[in-house]
Amino acid sequence: QVQMTEHGGGSVQAGDSLRLSCTAPGFASNRCGMAWYRQAAGKQREWVSSITNSGSLTYTESVKGRFTISEDKDKDTVYLQMVGLKPEDTARYFCEFLSGRCLFVRGQGTQVTVSS
Image 1 (cartoon, rainbow, N blue to C red):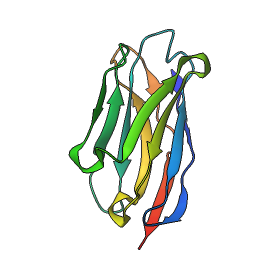
Image 2 (image 1 turned 45 degrees about the vertical axis):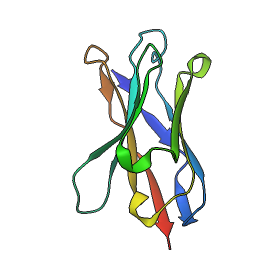
Image 3 (image 1 turned 45 degrees about the horizontal axis):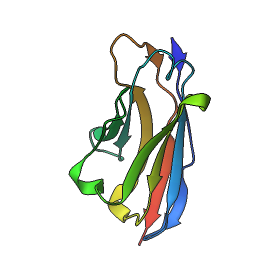
């Protein structure tokens, strides 16, 4: 199983930007695809964005136009560029493989806190 490692979170003001990264060995070579999720305190996990192994990008409605998912296959890393952050984006962000054949161990995630 692959250990997911997320980085890049922080405490920012509304309107600021952050870039999250998720490193997962084998992501590119095994054509796993990747998804970002987030979970705010006391709330259910929410899907945020995905990138398939063919490069198709999708986003949840609330982040469209503000978040951009991308990949660096040479580094087995997926990024989530977030601009125009809002207090409602406050959550712990996690990454997971899209493909069920790609086994992984969930990482600790990275906390994003946006104050108004």
